[in-house]
Length: 134
Length: 109
Image 1 (tube, rainbow over the protein chains, first blue to last red):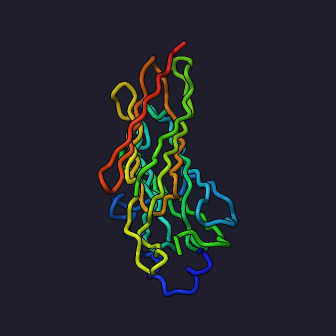
Image 2 (image 1 turned 135 degrees about the horizontal axis):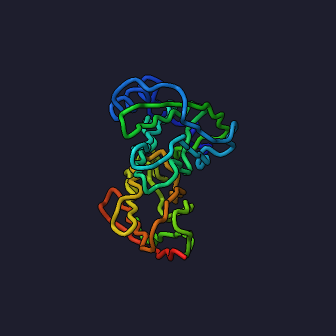
Image 3 (image 1 turned 90 degrees about the vertical axis):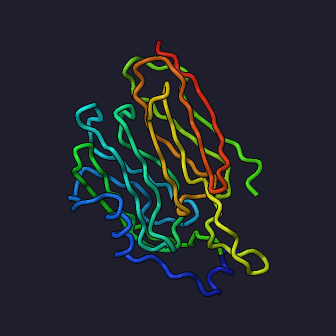
């Protein structure tokens, strides 16, 4: 089935700008580089389930914690991947999930701190077999 | 469509006061993206689990909003700081507003 998918016309992919816009609509302001770490394989053989861990350097106490992590991808049919809202009860600002990647693309994460500061990081993942149906 | 759906949890049964523990969750769900075509070439409508809400003794721990880019059988692992014994509650909701809940108790030793 995955092979057939490559033979038919597909919906347009999101672009880097769309991924940026999707993130900007959620996290208002200009994110700075740093504090955010994206862990994922450099090459994903199967785009259907690519392990991804996003962590943010934060003490996660009542005075300083990560409010939310926003994740976008710039080469899928839609730019959004997910949003995770945390509280100091989380203890550690880290989330692990598996994502679908249609093609080689960049994942971008933005972290919003409780004081409104924004931090970002991105990571390119090479995909051998795409994972959006087909 | 969305039948045979089962949440799975891996939560430690006990923890020390103040310990940060890892919580692993998975729900068996096809996460139809709305991009896939069936054998007749028709688009299969989008049907995904779009939300997971986790609370501990009623207090929010994690609020996850998922998009079709999250893999089938969505797996999420995250952390919880345990200060007191209690009940961790999970609620998943999909596009059809169907929801599934699960609970797990944690004892502070």
